[in-house]
Structure formats: structure tokens, C-alpha cells
Length: 329
Image (cartoon, rainbow, N blue to C red; front, side, top):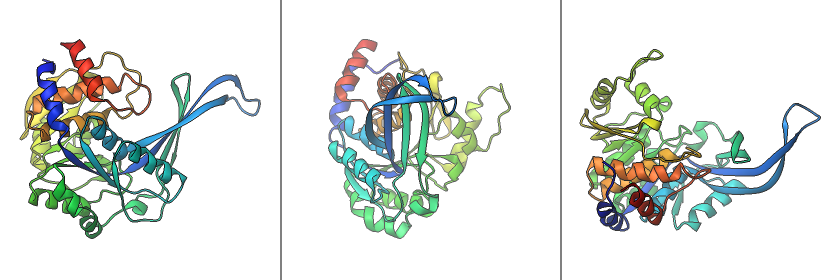
């Protein structure tokens, strides 16, 4: 089953009335585009003739861009430095109508620079400070975010393991959201080992799900889906679990039980950068709009299918999604 057009249109209409708060690791995605026609005489490396540079919001910022692109109102909270990268990041968010709540700190803005040659990524250069430089306390989070939590329909905790999301912050934001009756989702990075419990949705990929479950899988061993789902529910008591399986699609689970696996919707894959953020945004929006987990997963799957057909960190619009689903029907 794919998402029928007759279900998509009313779902998009409901999504347009939603307001989402994204809290997480903000970063600037910088792209250097060029061509390489010669090897440097200084070392056996290609010489890149730069044609242009582009910038967009990455990390939690890309989740926010996808939320806004799909039609919902969005506010994002995360660290933005007082530097050139921070100014470009703020501009990229503001351009899409996203309200930014900068968190306290005096460090540099996280920036990932990708060098693109003939539509292929040659290398990536990362600039960031140690995780403690981006940390926000639970008290600071409550002061900054309480009003926005009360005003929104859903909260997304987007962890890129850069330091903003720590146990006390996650616990406080989750408690405020539960008290206000709001939907809460987390995209976890297991190496941070966050202590979370009772959320509405988590969205690890296959490798992350095994790490979260504490399962060390030998090479060429079949993925123990039932064991992973049961163990993650026992550990974290999450209502819904969606495990992204790459080219194998999505594994859906509720209350520790497997519902089904849906195949990937992608027809052409040029770049998977940010596809997980698109899927997360789609799932949160559809579930918050009242869709079942299966319908929400098909919605998110279709949105990610559009994005991986684009080069670089990208988003999907309702018009693109309608055209994509119409071709699938």
C-alpha cells in the first residue's frame, strides 16, 4: 500500500494548521560547488575550481526546514553563534519563515562544509566546539521554551550528538510537554546515551536501534526486529517506534509489537543527506494531524522519496508530494 491521493490532500490541509517546536543541534550546511580538471603539483590531490557556494540550515535546522516546507508553522531552538556562520544560519531559517530561539553560549556555530565536484561529494570539513560548549541547562530550557511548548502542537527533539540535548534538558522539556498534552518525538543518537522515557515517537535507523537496544550483532546476522522492538519498549516505554532501514524501507512498531515493514518509496536516489530529517518531520506532522502510524509512515516515506531524488540537503513541498503520490497511484 502507498499513500492514496484522496488521503494526502486532507492530511496536508490539517498539517497546514499545526505548529511545531524543534529543539536540537543547529548547524550550517555549506556547499562548495566546482569542477576538477587537474592534479595539484604540490600533492596528488585534485585542484577544485570553485564555481559557487551555497548555504542552508542543517541538523535540527533541516528538520525545521522540512516542517515548514510541508506547510506547518515552525519554531526552532538551538545554538547559533555570533559569527558569520551564525548569521548565515539565522538568515536561512528566517527566509523560510522559521522563528529561531537562540540558546545561551559563546562558542562558534557548528558548520559542515561539503566540497561537491560534478555532483559528487569529494570531502566534508567540519567546524565545531566540544559538546559542553553547546549545552543548555534544564532551567534555561524551561525559561526559554515554556511559552512555545504551550503554544505548539508537537515537540521534536533532534539529537546530532553535538551537546545541546542532555538528560536534564530532555527530561524537563518532555515533562513540560506531557503536562501540556503535547506530542513529543526524539531522533536519538545512541552515543549520547540520553535517558528518556514515555515519549510518543522515536526514529532510530537500523544501526542506532541495535545500539539503543544494547545488541551487538555479528556480521551477516539477520536483523532481530522483534527482539529490538520489544527491548526498546521495555527500556524506553515509547508509544511508537519507527526504524528507518535505508533501502529496505521502514519498520513500524507500537507498544513494543511489530506492526509491519513498508518498502522504500524512492524511485531515484541522488543524495541521502537529510532524508532522515524529512522522514522525521513527515511522521511527526502526520501523527499530530491525527493519522494512524501506518498512514503517517507512508506520508513520511513519500516525502523522503522526493528528497533523495535531489542533490544536497533538501526539503519537499506539498505540491511536490502531491505530484509524487499521483505518479505512485
